[in-house]
Length: 437
Image (tube, rainbow, N blue to C red):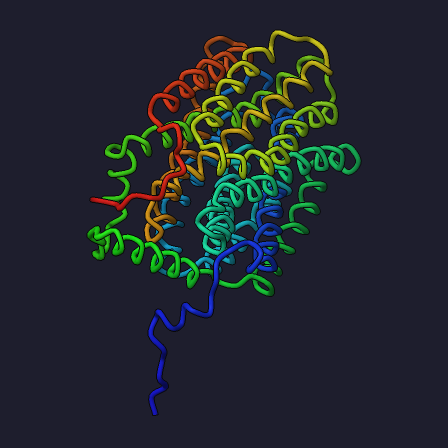
């Protein structure tokens, strides 16, 4: 006898939105993004800092050094683009598990590396892992939360992820001093990846039903306003064109996402090299850079929910300008305490803009296409790793100096902040508008 299945509306009544109602699962998703951040952070200072001694790169091999971030950024950007669309079709949890499986080769490739090409392969797998796992953890929390909690959720998500990035950068550098870079990254990486995979299989549930409930509520609200509801399936290509070229606010947010990753590429590739050239040890350089990550992560607990109350535009633009000024000033000072202060201010600027950008994109997107629109935004955002690292590598190569990239990033951040200021509405927390292809 065929088993009777309840209609979708009846099935969805068993789910409710809100952080408090779904606290246990949101905590599990925060643990996931924390572990994803640890996986990323372990490569941040150790790999560029020991490129010459461990992998044979010459001190002026700026293009080779930048290339490993270019590979990471391209792969992660493509995975972000696909992950949001695929998760709408196949669910979040499956892609989360696949992402952890793809992370396993990363510490193994670094440990057995015979040349810098092995590191590039490791970055390819790291990009696959980050594009899937980070996206799924964020989408799942947005599914579970209420519509008015997007900024708070983004703040929690980025706090967990980027505090872990900063912490892992310092811990892995300390372990590298004790045990050597390869052994440290192998042990640390396998432990973190194994735990992430175990928890994804054991504790994480799929949140696609909550996403469907968001869409049902959105359609009901649209119907009450006597607006036509778009029921037809929209292709990823159509959404890509819409978000990249047609919708002015999304265009501004996508370019902002791309440019803000210039800062993180700078911190990842050139800040360790610059600090080491200023007679800082690997652990000292890692500690300064860790301040950037920890302040970035912790401050988002304030800036994320704050954007829900005061709007997105002011926080985003101010964060860009603060990052621009601190990038310029970083090469004007000469003491560890000054670098530490500027790293903290740079982290604060990133905290002001980073979760707020994601929340602003979620404001504009319809619930049924939100994961895909966010995936498009994250594509352009993480493409900024590749574009930024490549531009900085070329500039450093031809100028034969690591200082030029700091000026490039500073100028780009100041200009991008102006674009956001003029393109966004003052209160960019208004209900999402209907997507039109």
